[in-house]
Image (tube, rainbow, N blue to C red; front, side, top):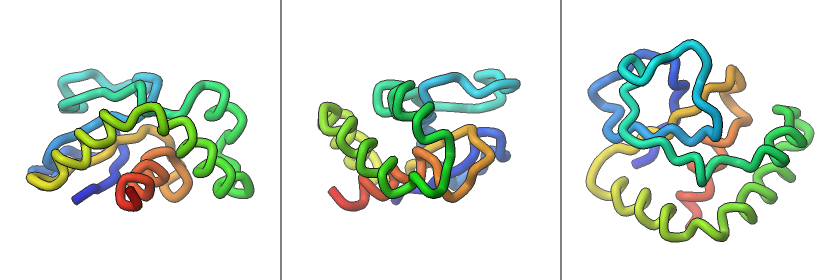
Amino acid sequence: MFKIKRVYDPVSADDGKRILVDRLWPRGINKEKAQIHEWLKEIAPSHELRKWYSHDPAKWAEFKKRYKQELAGETEVLKRIKAQARNQAVTLLFSTKELEHNNAVALKDILNQS
């Protein structure tokens, strides 16, 4: 089971494995408070894609398409995350204030489709 959550939200026991899926470390939060088990920068959108998208909802469908293309080279990491989710909850953490159109939402969809 995959969940998504802002890294700034309180940690809860049902989060399971907490994986940060942003390329940049979130501002204003230290590692102890974040309680992140793993930081997977390599599956975050590229700087170019992130800047192009700029959280513009009009670009959401194209962002998801381009992000999925970027993830094509990370099949082993994605397989490992999916295997972990078979045994425990996996929470994909993100830092943006945009709750509906962000890379964690897109990644969850991609993981559930493959």
